Length: 235
Length: 337
Image: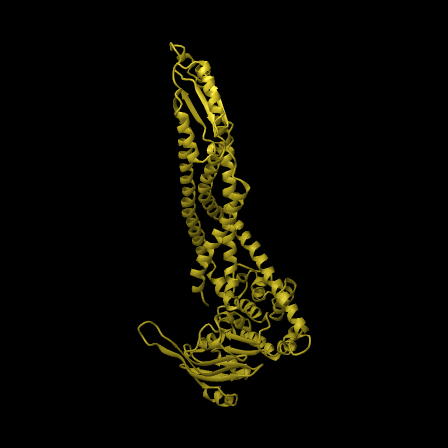
């Protein structure tokens, strides 16, 4: 489902040659697999996710998602690629000028779903994250945890085969974090490929999923499924 | 876990397999219709929503609308004026009416003979004799100088024959006719009422050119005004654009509401301009009719005809669309997630 082949990403700023945000990263994720991406701040977690969403293109190497090479993808194909990748952002990226319902409905609206279909799917997604009663509220009236769950509902409402999350439990207390993680597990169980970037080591530990560990732009563990045990030893 | 949530698992593999079975083609057709339906639905929704957004902020929208309307009213009014003058000049354009002044001291009989002579000429369709006395009566009646004329000892006006050539006479034929009439002994001079018609036509041509120049300049102004307004709208919705692009919105999808907004700016501006022109007509037609009456003319100011009014609104809409397109091309590509 997801394959990184010796991917490097260098952000070059004017004048300087820049440094590699990622260098020679290779790994694969199977269909329906759930994995964590960990590492210190600046290790390249966000860059890796951006490459998967094609917000960035690799300097070297290839990113292949669902059989398509993102480097060779035409600009016009990018939106269609993004519809297949649900993303949960650390800062939610919700729109505060519309209701919870309209926020969650956005991907369906873009994909051109009929109003009936939209209503049905949005409610199913909100039900899933436990916010069915709050569809008419503005996201600004919700707590941080609830806003995050609206973000999750929006990420999955289109039933994307891949779900990415960037620090989804960033500023939540442990109990809420566990709830959110539990949600991700449920999506994995219905066949979604899930990749979660987080620095919440404790939570990752108790989940027991595969871990991809980035250190200064290099993947030091987890690039093989069998590395799981050694990855644990490195923490 | 509910049935709806389990659906992804069941549905996901289907897109790849769908086309392998025999129903593939018909399903593709259904999908095509659905895509078209969705596209149409989106356009309809965006069109309504962008208008609703403009109406939700009536004060600022009205400002833009009025700017556009005024920018269109100026060339529109000019066009209306030229159009009316053209209709006025249409009455004279083809006629090269000439006034033949007879020598002083020619008596009634000679004059009548002259009139006979002229009226049988090949390129004369009508010749009317106006005696000196008749001319004086006419002058008294229309000039308002009747009192002053009583102080004159004798009639200063000469007898004239009004000669009307047939319609569509060429300039050369007309000149030939003038020469011929002038060769008669009893004729003092011939005056062709062409010079002022030519001047009027030249002025009208200038007016038409002026409409084009002023129209082009103000059209550019409309494009810039709408472009700038849309730029502000884009700036105000940067977050939304970013999120829409993140969840898979195409450039066309992101562009659409702004293009419709521009279209609405232009369209409503055009309709307002038309209303303003109609108001101008209402306010001016009375005074114009009065002036025309004073000159003894039966002239009514015509409103902007339906055709030009239609094109005014259409071109206003297109200018709004152009302005927003220009702005969207410049600013939207800069917003990337």
